[in-house]
Image (cartoon, rainbow, N blue to C red; front, side, top):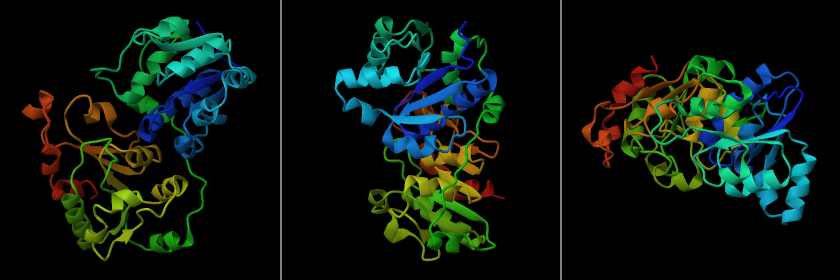
Length: 332
């Protein structure tokens, strides 16, 4: 059994914001169960603002900065980290090969990647394909070499989450937040990462929330704004294209609710224990049982859990049939 007390370890996950968000409880668990452990998170440049908000991570390094180095420089950098173990949460062949060449003693990955047969000396027999457990729970399979015998519950996983922003918001946004109204962020797009509820539904929800006395904000990238900016009601505050990721995290920390499909901002809201309302398709593997946001205040909606098209994996837009009323009801 691996004893990681007073050791330096690397957690490698170089994919998207939502995936990284659901990996952070792993860091909290390790900090709690291994005294003096030092955690380095190997991620990507664009997820660094997320990682910097996690109190359980001691150092953040970007794969983008490493992959542009020559092979000898990469090996030297990895050796200087003096890591006793690396957990390949998101399998990447180049990183797995580098970890072995650098002499990291314990290299942990799933047995369902062929390149791990040559690069990992601890191979855990699990696969994410068709898994029924939540994505955050699946990450804990990799701790079996450390003595973990059962996956933690989502309630336990929430207790391992220590996430907060220290970023200051722009004055113009603070002014917009300085009201006595409850605040809600609507995030209509997903950059293709999820089945979406539809712009028309979000605009209708915005109008309903305005009528109900909410202070309504829209978020998204400048590119995403081109799909809906001209439709946003005048009473809403359009922040699309105006916020860095650091500022968006700090902004979400200040609001009451966020409504979105299965996107990074939804998972950020969950980590911050805001009222994250996720709109989902029931189709596997993108259903809420696998991808719902963490956090005790999070809620999810699907239109029909027993949708026949979704059950057979056919293209389906049943998510668009979720009613505005059912979403707004979750905020009462």
